[in-house]
Amino acid sequence: MSAAPTPAKDAVRRRIGTAGPSLLDLSHRIHAHPELAFEEVRASEWVAGRLSEAGFAVEHGCYGLPTAVRATVGSGPLHVAICAEYDALPEIGHACGHNVIAAAAVGAGLGLAELADDLGLTVTVLGTPAEEGGGGKVLMLERGAFDGLDAAMMVHPAAVEMAAMSGSAVSVFDVSYRGTAAHAGAYPERGVNAADAMTVAQVAIGLLRQQTTAADRVQGIVTEAGSAPNVIPDASRGRWIVRSDTLQGLGPLTSRVRRCFEAGALATGCELSTEPVCPDYADLRPDARLLALYRANAEALGRTFPDLSAQAVVGAATDMGNVSHVVPAIHPMLGLDCAPAVNHQPGFTAACVTPAADRAVLDGAVAMAWTCVDLAATAGP
Image (cartoon, rainbow, N blue to C red; front, side, top):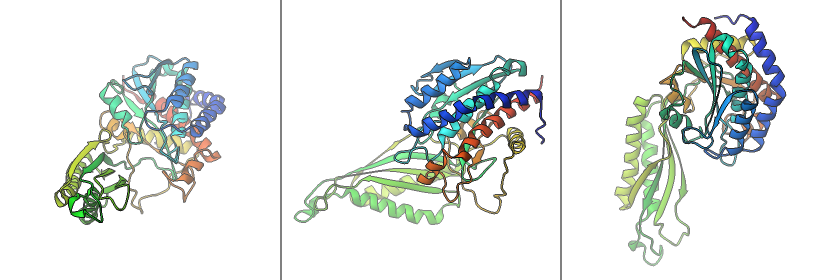
């Protein structure tokens, strides 16, 4: 599919170019002030403020989420949403580049704002909090944020360019065991060891991995397992993630993992409790038509997509997956050419304020806006 230039596309690119300095400033400010899931007070205010200045009708703190944003311009029959993420990771900040995502989404909105009605578009920029383990988009989806949309899109930085990320389905939950404390030297027989229960579960999960598929993942951290070596631990806690390539595969795999934790309780006599951290994330299903339009536009900007077919590209997860099951959606990846640094590493945090990241902000904004222009031009009556 070609991405032929048009007067509308030229105008969009000029507007984004004019806004470029403010977009890069927004990206760098969000990067310099990382905020965790549901705590993105400054980032959401900055996103809402920039869109309000451009004439968008802005709601801040919508859908029962204090850091969610809805900003709309235009009144055309074709309604598209551009998603902005802005939460960071604990300790390593914007190691997933949500500062780039937010600035690119704002940029696409600014590029389309003055042309929306002429193009037959309604454009909504959605500020979606808590992608990193909070499921902000899932909550917003359940509360109507994506109702009536014809398309939804966002871009995401990565080490390499990808038109489509193979996003996994994910379940995240907390695990805790309760046992009985005792003197580990004098009266160990009076104790019920909660740390042992967690160890038994981890060994069982390690053995389970022999019977899982190549796309399945089970990961976790132990956050508590006792406070002194001469005291039998009466409590242990951890957080675990189960990943599968589809929602259909996630359910059975999660059940098997939970039985591993039940084995820990059975073997030690501890009490087990589990608690979901966020709604399950669905696998990502990119819309083929949108994807073809986006890729052609990205290539017209000089971005190239390497052949990744020779390697197994196991997807991370995104709450955009849930959106893609309901609305035609895409989630392409913008390469920052920063290998060996990859997402969720400190080196990637540094990469997200480089010239390559700045170019990704502007290219991502233009490519998404152009995709909206093409979508409007090819929409049926």
